[in-house]
Length: 148
Image (spheres, rainbow, N blue to C red):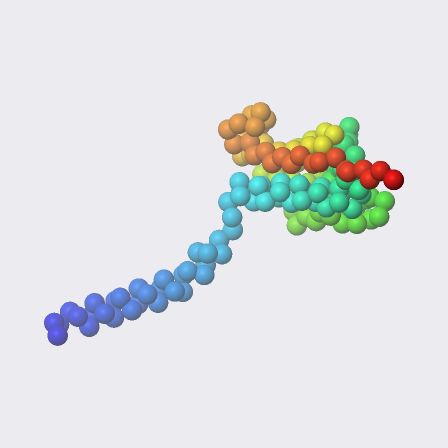
């Protein structure tokens, strides 16, 4: 066997060991802020769907005072005191649900549609463009069963 073969093999084994040791730390890196924002926005949508299922298809009442009241309804301030949404993020005064950039998510509830928006890194309303993130869900109105 050539002289350098064992040195090359030992180097290859060391490289393989380094990859195996570093792989878990690479795969457990925290998600980027945009991915985290999308996940949090989807959590709000899911919480709203769970609320609607529990309350016969009714959406949380839209708030004229901002997102805090809607978020509080989803976080347990509802007639049955059911928690549909939890947060591991710090809350601003008024209990807004914050995106990864520290700004409140914009939650809009219409008759059968909910939209959750993060203004993104630039923290400006770009009308859903540029770095804004918008998640939307349209609900079917509750079906009515007529008595026969």
